[in-house]
Image (cartoon, rainbow, N blue to C red; front, top):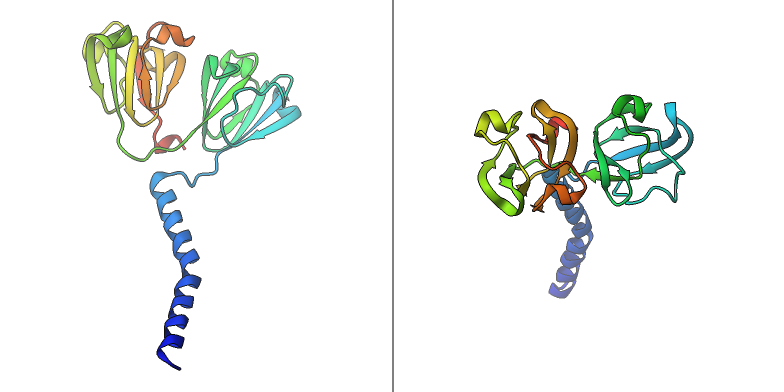
Length: 211
């Protein structure tokens, strides 16, 4: 076999192995970011998982085209935020793996109209909280859970924030009680204009332990 034949054979071997190398690299990349998790939630029209159902694995801004109402669900894997109004508005509730047979009894919500899939975050967490709207007043940078901003920072209000890293849950009362709001990376200049409560008093990270 001449040099040209050897060269062609080597090139063909490289071409055949490229898809395998690419697939392995993609798997490594997905594993490092936590995006290999297949999140899945199934919604049901009636309590106790009865009536028509709708399976979802990503964001859904309006469920009305799939279900006339939604009163129970099963989270097979991953984490989701559900909302009682379309377009991710209204009251919110955090859902992790488990069964939710009656929204009204368990959460005080009579219906679910939209949902967001929460991707797993395995890196660092960082968020700046502000005492007033538009990043005004006292500011503190957080990297871990806080069960009371009053006890830790002597802040009696948190009305805006800037989430730099990670995904967070924020609550209207200390000790992670009361209504909640999901925060992903971005700027939130005025909580009251987001259709939520005017202030938030405790916050926690949505980390790997939630999954």
